[in-house]
Image 1 (cartoon, one colour):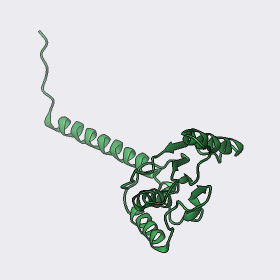
Image 2 (image 1 turned 135 degrees about the vertical axis):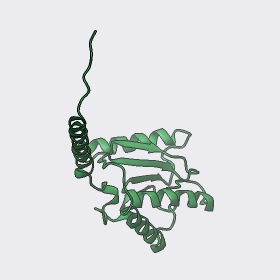
Image 3 (image 1 turned 180 degrees about the horizontal axis):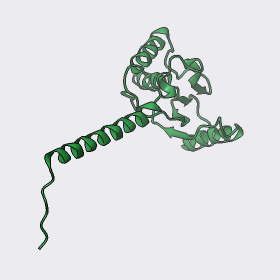
Length: 176
């Protein structure tokens, strides 16, 4: 029969200290690798690479856009500055654009909904493509507009193209 000898207390204490030290070193290494390479996403960096208003692209006139007044610009700047002090998600260089159609008679509730998308674009630096007049005389405006945007993107160099185009209906709200 196998008998185990008891380990002296001094040896157990040294082993425990070694395990705690090793655990501490691994924890510090993990923290360094996680936070050491950490940086703010592009969308939260101070200032923008371009004028925030230039991110909104109307097609067929600008009569459908909400007024891009100084209060909207100030709100976007305030939110961007507030977000700089919050822990962000990991940085991403994905180029995203949103596409919507907003033609016909101007109605206040649609203008307010589109204003939320405009504000979101100004905060996060994403393009917003808005079709203000129909492209064709039928129900095929959405596919025709998206196809025209895809063709426009394909002409650009690969590093400048949008990688994602998201269609949003004109009655959707962004509560970001």
